[in-house]
Image 1: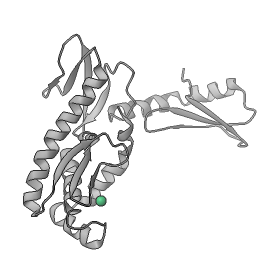
Image 2 (image 1 turned 120 degrees about the horizontal axis):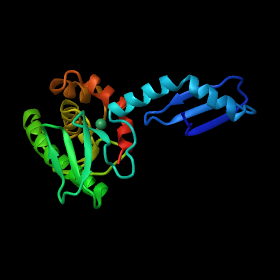
Image 3 (image 1 turned 60 degrees about the horizontal axis):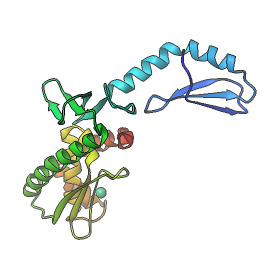
Length: 220
Ligand SMILES: [Zn+2]
């Protein structure tokens, strides 16, 4: 049986069901519709709802359960499964593509691990891209920003959200090129995009990926 996460009643005449990016089920119903009818309607749609939820989960876009165990999230664009066990350290198995977390403070340990790895990857990527682009920057820092993937200050200090680690590597490269291009152009003018284009010819595709996956910002 499917239980809706939310029921919105209004002056409509028919029932409808929708699923958001995290797999939550919302039913829209007429104001005086009986619950019995809502549940009957949901059981008719059960197969479709289950399929949608499985797709969302497979894409690493479902919200994690409290204890994180068994949860899959996108790591460098690929679903990575979390295994919470009795170990003492965070371990990443690149072959299995699984991340092992100690039971104690699993969530904090995970965030720390993500931030450390984001910093490592972003520092080296920024350094090599800056060389390639002939640009100079002041510093690289990794934040927990949920509203932007990266930014470039007036004095060319670069900030990235550790959440860029969810994106495929070529999308991360685009984010780095984008911020480095801001060291030359502080706006999103045509000159800015022309400069980006030299280093990431298909930047539009990368932007599309980020837009479509903005919801990942909400995970963890
Ligand atoms: Zn920008």
